[in-house]
Amino acid sequence: MSTDIRPIRIYNTLSGKKEPFTPITPGRVGMYVCGPTVYSDVHLGNCRTFVHFDTIYRYLLHIGYRVRYVRNITDVGHLLDDGEDRMSKGARLDQLEPMEVAQKYTVGFHDMMRIFNTLPPSIEPRATGHIPEQIEMVESILQRGYGYESNGSIYFDVLRFAKDNPAIYGKLSGRVVDELISESRDNLKNQGEKNHPSDFAIWIKASEEHIMRWNSPWSVGFPGWHLECSAMSTKYLGPTFDIHGGGNDLKFPHHENEVAQNVGACGCAPANYWLHANMLLLNGRKMSKSEGNTITPQQLFTGDSPFVSKGYSPMMLRFFMLQSHYRSTLDITDDALLAAEKGFRRLMEVHAILQKLSIPASATDGSETDTDRAILALVEEAYQGMDDDFNTAVAIAALNEIGSYVNKLANKQIESSEVSPWVLERLKTVFNAFIFDIFGLREESAADNGPIEQLMSLILDIRANARQQKDWGTSDKIRDALTEAGIQVKDGKEGVSWTHSRG
RNA sequence: GGUCUCUUGGCCGAGUGGCUAGGCAAAGGUCUGCAAAACCUUGUACGGCGGUUCGAAUCCGCCAGAGACCUCCA
Image 1 (tube, rainbow, N blue to C red):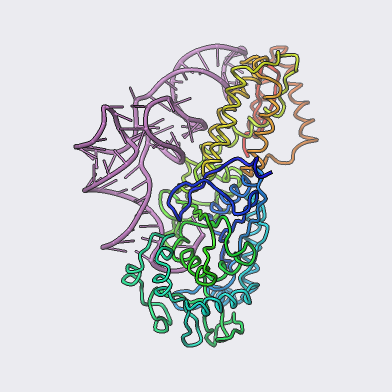
Image 2 (spheres, rainbow, N blue to C red):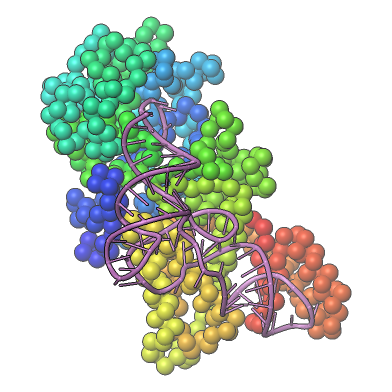
């Protein structure tokens, strides 16, 4: 029931502050996130953005919303400085058909999303699959007087739109139209076809050598960048929906123009809440291929890069990303990764220990203890962190504090009578939910089970015998050899256990 | 050049007008055959200079540094 859903607050770029989230339809959320342009391999920054929005999607689902999550694939429409479409440029370089290029990088993108354990969106529409919808939108914009034809191309009339809707254009990106006039560069191709430098193309007449082309009432051509998102979000989520997300760098011009197109086409604003994920930095700087300050996800996994001392697993990287808030820049450094890796292991280890804990009902008298209250307060803190603009860092901190209780309980450093069985059960459920359902983490230690479990139990048994006979030479030899093999032996009060010490 | 954001202890990284974030690293302790793991204790951090306030790291101003956008970009 929607009335049971916890209230949450979201930072809305439109207003510049946190607002209580109220969906258009109670209990349901429509969310659109700008997906990748598939003309090259996924950028690590894309991964961060999509991991965060995946976590937002997961949290909304977890607290009980029914969510339609739309994330597009842009496979046409980006103009380069020389006016060449990005897709066809890639095709020329690779000697491939444009759709072959799109397909190749789409598959690569999906693989990467799977590696980072993101849930697939409910709908993943492609720009080239929605040419008729985009043409219709151009027609609507023309009918309402916010577009004009020039030489077979259609441009969006930003000045006129801004004049009619002074409270809308520029609101998202904090821009003033007068400034746009003086600041716009005029070195774009076809600039002469525009009435004003800040106008942008919504339909572009294809030049002879342009490979991607479709018929339209105006010319054989292709849709402008920005248009696909307006058309597809409208088609699948309606003219006005709840949440629109994307990377910070899309605020302008992409999102600003998207708003203008939607309002220009139907007179209604596309989304109520705009969320923007911040950039990923490498050693304090924006990643840049031309300056050599860049690392691919693959290099991060293998460690094959001068920027890292070793490889890092995808799940550890996901955890690393979630340790910061989505609206903050996140700086990748080897030290930070090393520290996060240990933090990740600690959390996963706590989870494993917790799931094995049990407290006999007879251990307590049924009343709520101080420890019960402390633990429940931390659980609530984790949820409130997420409620407050999806603050994963705060939630992780609360989970870590819970971790101390879990370890103390497992070590018998606090009596089991101090924790009520139902609190422990609740803790197990909550931990499970946060780690797997919300944070989208997953166990990484190889699918060991069967044989390894048996071997380990044999080895540890031999070691236990040696220790009983005070044969420290043998027991330490076993321990050292296992350490060497990446297995950590833990001698606890309750017996011996082991974990993989490297992932 | 214009617009905007950020600057937190050794390293990351939350937060915020008065109350311990958290992780990693470090030191001491408990436990241990010795370790490891775990647990406990320890750091009096909020770029600089002014101002507002009973009180600011948190609000305002100036300065310095960094970053982002203005052009394809997650």
